[in-house]
Length: 96
View 1 (tube, rainbow, N blue to C red):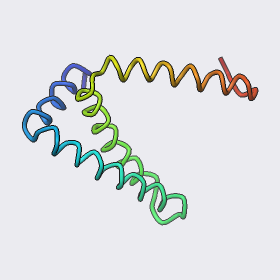
View 2 (view 1 turned 30 degrees about the vertical axis):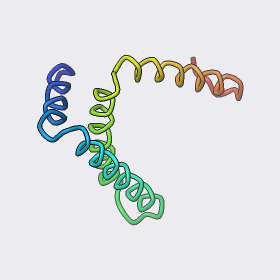
View 3 (view 1 turned 45 degrees about the horizontal axis):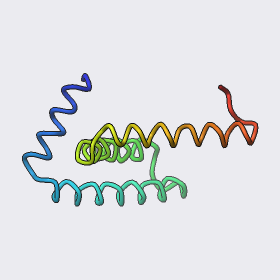
């Protein structure tokens, strides 16, 4: 599915159910991902369950990005990636 269609679907979710509802769902999905990671670390669930929760959270993160402004998110993402690269290089792990 192309990104333009995904953005339209996610935007429709925000329009249909409202920002407040989608913010609550984002919190719930974040909590479910935290629980799944915890269970996976203790070998209680398989990686496919974590993958499902990552997919749910990914969709919510994209909705959050649409809500706050994708340009701001992209700007912060670039800064964070630059900082990660610097830290990796400092520690001798960068493959760039």
